[in-house]
Image 1: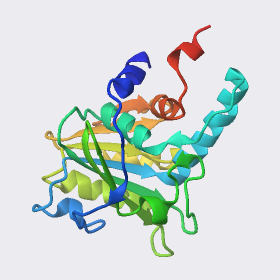
Image 2 (image 1 turned 180 degrees about the vertical axis):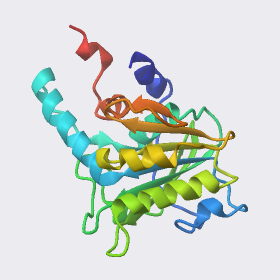
Image 3 (image 1 turned 60 degrees about the horizontal axis):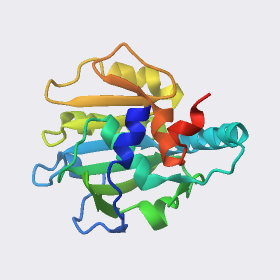
Image 4 (image 1 turned 135 degrees about the horizontal axis):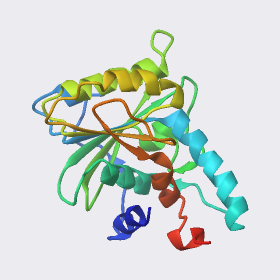
Length: 222
């Protein structure tokens, strides 16, 4: 965990959200060979919000101090680092998949899925990050939507690295989808418990979220 914290703090950059000027087309953009997209981060936003809430409740009690909402750009940076992204000019698309009727990630800042995040972008030392929010509909569940985006990323010649944050109940289907990953792709699964049984790397989701919540490694020393 110390390494995760040190990497995320290695450089401080001002992240300014702006309207995405690249005119990415949601869902189809990552299979467009004319659009640069090196990495894909796919997040079940409902699940991430619940985990952030649980961490806030538990660590406020443990640390005896209030915790802010998770810093979303910082969390995205941490996930990118977990997925093998290094300093440079990569373009990373971030897909925030959420339930119908959910308008914001309550425990993240910024958190409004469609007014503050959808179609926005920011740049820092890891490159350009393009954010899009995708809502489940009556004809497609949140889980199916997440898996559809995963399959698009796996089949894209552009995408080299994929980071995935699924709901716990979706893990069996995700693991099945990742049984055979193309040799030129690196896939990292971030969950609260280690997951094996597929052609992917597994890391703990809690570390990156703790970083985004401003929890310092020295605060966790006995």
